[in-house]
Image (tube, rainbow, N blue to C red; front, side, top):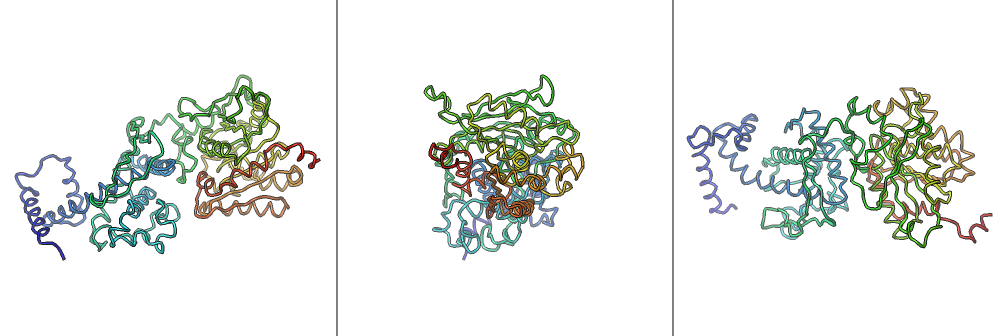
Length: 560
């Protein structure tokens, strides 16, 4: 079964290894030699010196080619798409390195970076698709019975169990190389080395595509499965601040994360938390501002004289046209999540802008207020953080006075922002035409939320938490909500296991109160705003058409 020339070549390599093996005069003396470290690692797991030559042969013929291919494909897929996978993986890696005092322990990679390891497993399934035609040994990699109907879609999270650890059962369905998976060193060593390399790259450097669209290349069967980089991605590589970890004096690790990040934010230090509770104005110099987004300041009179808050805004395309000076528009508040900033809404703004340009949504002014990364959009128990008052009594009049608004308003939020959107809309139903809450953090017990996210607002008081909870406001104001009328939409991913039951409880309360609403569960999606948006098109946008679209003269007469 094995070619004689291959056996002869293998024996030649073995002899050459023996000539430069441990203890020989020609053994490299560099203590940083990669193979020397690998040898020590193998010996620590029971590989004796006499068997090292055989191990080296396995490493060269199996481990190293797979390492090269694995790292290449992982980086290609991390750079592909809209960046949510790379952001989630980087946050996971940052947390791992921070807890490890700046070191990368290969033995802990599997436990501490499950999403990255799942990405490694997934790229072995996905790598280029040529195997279906050319390599019958790998047909099962694309078997839809094994990998579901979307087997050719790159989705690492299918290898995660309960989102926090790798599902070994799914991983075992793969064959690494050769046929017998248990004999492959790649099952143990390569995955750790490849993942550790990517961890080191992600936490040490910002790697971003320069131009779009990025086309994922196909694999080349003549080059050990490597990508054929005919459509190579142009990237910008920039060393991250302080090289290996971000500056401890900046809060953007905690507040300026992408809105489709499914991993929990790392725990902030007391110093970082103190900064978050005073950040009424988002530092504009720390944000890469997309085209069409502008920055505004407003006086926060509710906080005292001479104090300001900030917001980002996006105007309709025809807003500033010279011949369009009288048209008025509705506006939509977009509320960010916990440990994040207003600029988290940039991606939502982009998606809504595309919908407006495609005619799927009425032209709308898009407002993204900075409302403290840990504020919950209510007035804190001690009134030290009057966020609700600032939004309703300072920012809302400022928007009406600054822009050509028509009196129609909507509010949408994600996660903590979803809680805030429901809180404001239910408490002030006469002020809004519609409310949309995506993955709203509406847990009933204060103890279910991390202390650092809720202490400054609720100070451990469950009664105050209940008083401001959307369900309590709904029961108090259901008649006003019913007669407003307020359009209500709840969206949650079926895999958003922390919040699914809480959102269902809220929907049940709406049902009991006789309030019309939409409760949409999105299959196979977790705590992921963008994924929910994309999975619910075009209804994601037409909802706002129903709420905010100006009435025609005929419709106005009929409604009267």
